[in-house]
Length: 274
Length: 211
Image 1 (cartoon, chains in turn red, blue):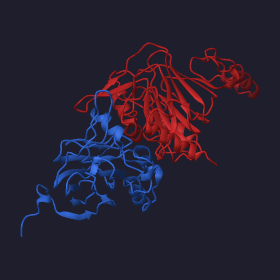
Image 2 (cartoon, rainbow over the protein chains, first blue to last red; image 1 turned 60 degrees about the horizontal axis):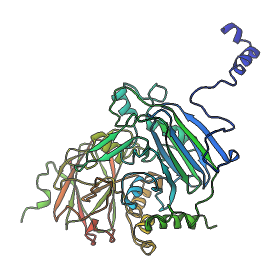
Image 3 (tube, rainbow over the protein chains, first blue to last red; image 1 turned 30 degrees about the vertical axis):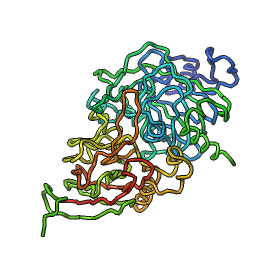
Image 4 (tube, chains in turn cyan, green; image 1 turned 60 degrees about the vertical axis):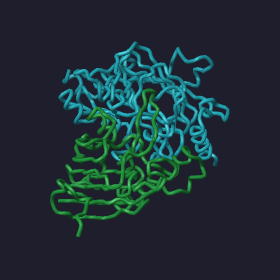
């Protein structure tokens, strides 16, 4: 093999022979999906990718874009970083998200708020019901303690370092990776403040539909929940699909559901008044 | 001369002692092994609190890493305040109130417009204090993350409902923090006047550092 591939044209032929290989976790270019919702044209499909267990993906999404996440096999955990794409110093603020909405549990109709009093994304549909805005993600130390290793080059990468790589691809760094939310894995709070994780595994095929309310950068890390009690690194593929959609109109029920949310949308609309 | 009640129980020489005025920012460097005592002088005063590793300030306090590591949302005596890289930054060695908050974040001019209305946009806010103090050392908006609110009470109900409710502090109550590494402390003595976190009346706090 080495002798054959020492010839550049043979090495090229070898590399080119891989074309067309299909694996479970990969992007599909151009995007194809046969399960778009009623009324969504295939031509509006923007992104179709399956994120590997332990993997990550990142993309810039325009205002109005719908982002659908599917927990294909019931054990995905979508850790999420969100930035204003044109000014990434503005980013998801988990504290404001729970405080402004007077509730700590994420679900349909909830807004993901920035630190500038604006809505970055809203949760349009929630077929899972188990999410977490409190626990954050794993880091090198927690993974080393639980799995014996946790580096990006290991079989069990940690969430923080996945976020760092994703953010770095937009020129962002250690100061930009911020408190995250986790979709598909839940955490509830007992009366004494104890955190009760709910990591499943669940039935496969649960989905969440998000809507970009601003131009955003999303970084998604598909790693085990930081409080997953299982000793083995347990996570399954996460499917991501995005399509073009209309900017949220002033009559939208999510926009108008609460006075706090309505003012957050007013702030978004004010930001885009240019 | 009567004994100073606010230093009771502290061991080691006092190396710094300062009153932070109501509504003001505060920045201070604390060496590993030193203890910071925060005194809620008049009661019901939220002290918004951030920490940076002095040697490398891209490492900073992480509310999420702190609560995940202890499996509990409330910061109590014994809580280890952890960084975004999972390391111990400070430990709460004593607390005269049952628990402190780290999910409620800091008030900002912008979030005030959501919570109370655009008429509050011009009011002073904790994020303004955090920015002002951090700018002194070259940090900026990217460096502001979820903070601690000492003496603030944010219970979470069974359905996830939460809110800043009446304080559980009283005049003269204290919290003690031992530095586990060299840390830079950035505080906003909360100026909020639209919720109960400061009893609708921001007041001074005292910062005492012992070696």
